[in-house]
Length: 394
Image (cartoon, rainbow, N blue to C red; front, side, top):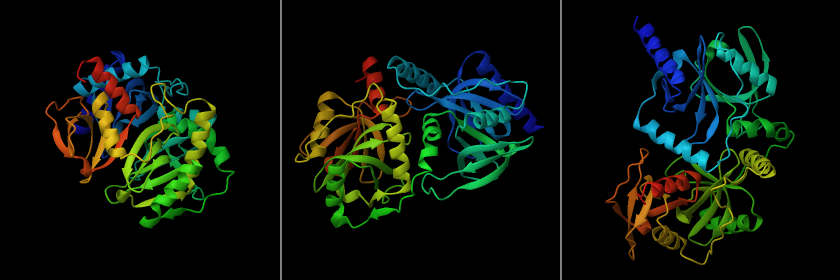
């Protein structure tokens, strides 16, 4: 009885959000990721949301099976903040991914319609299955009454392709028509004609400067990995480099310009010069540049920096002077978004801005030498900065 009550409550919340045109958060079971969007359709088996990313950009859609939903939220401070973020993104005329979302018939199962639409348009899907922990992505090769066939791909290993038959009931969550999936769908046929790359990774710290200097001159994409603190890595070109630090022009997972990042040389664990993933992202970048979607309207990817400067000090001074929002990673591994005041000879005061847009007006004192990485002029930071200025908080 309890499960029936929970499903009824979830269905009620989804129907209310749809009828009242409320922005909603849908929280799946057993995973940290949740989805924010407007309810597109409610079927017998699940719901389709037109989703937004954390910058307020419309970013495709997601199908979520009813049995996979933990709870639904349509009234919260987080959603109020998100509505403002969406309005800012629309005002700034950011590039959105919305035009590939089909119309759905609520009187029949939505999962079949999602899969059939992807099959007809050769669009990539990202799939979370009930029998697997990790997500899978690929294209639909055939559709049947009770299941469908997919070719699953791996952007990190182009030789790794798997043919899978998946029951509709196993497809708990299916993402489609988003920014990354759209460019992946458009470029993958060409990517598969290219020769997979033999991975070339440099781990000798004594050669990092020469390797990065060569990458600066060639302006080729590289991966900088900081495995000492996290599994995250930067895909970028090198803007400026000296013996102590490197400043990178970042590229995001959809092949778009992702702002700048300044990294201390002694925090770098490895540098990858060739890999299948770099080849894939380069194809994405080429596609975005060809379609004039590489740089969002509010960003500037043409800044040049002087490698003879103490770049950390120069950027911290600039951030304080102009009250710029940036992201900072400390030697402890802590990463925060905020702004800088009270710059001294060796320290500054950092004011954290939390995800609910609460600003720490007091701030904390930080030693310049404790900062391992600064990221700035990326979309989240620019939009947040504009938002706070409009409210008179910056």
